Length: 243
Image (tube, rainbow, N blue to C red; front, side, top):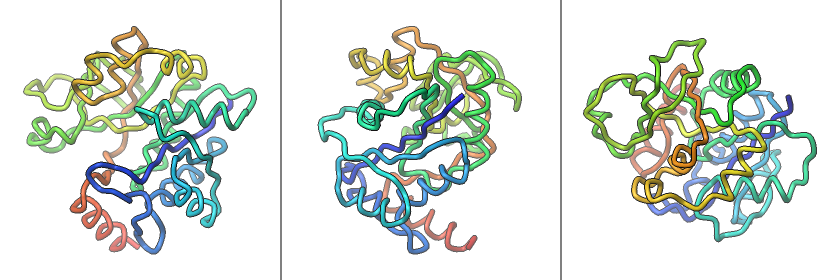
């Protein structure tokens, strides 16, 4: 099966404008993500963005990028436009990596791709164990409830995605990485945004609201994403210390 990885990215993030081009160890966040995706070695990798500065940065650092419209409501819509623009043939799976998770585990990317090739799934994603009870009430940490308790070999069905919860049964820290079959991606972008999706600011709810099944694989860890200045400084410290 042939996989294409597309990383949606834009400069106008509400909480931390200019985020993709912030540097860690002398390399922009978006180029860190691009390199991780390349190291996973599951197929071609492309960044999809509305900003020429991101294109320039990615190309300068040895990557590939395409310009997309600035009217997209979600990252998935941006990915679909990029897919059409690239005009690639015979792609079976499209991997959507978040452009603000430079600490994503390469093995987790490989594992999700592998699960999607083994199981006849429409859409797959990752989740990690919740280590801290406070995370259940933290709206910035998206949670997923799965049908069964996740084990390494499982690819359990997602029952719901939510921002806060008191429930502790089969609940995990959702990691914003998706893999769609080409057919599912096309179906997804043709659907209207659902009320549930808009209210909770979670586009994956559009899939569940329209009977698109999402399967969840267990990740080794939940990478620290970059949403705020504090997140950026904390992650910079960790990544630079490791180096």
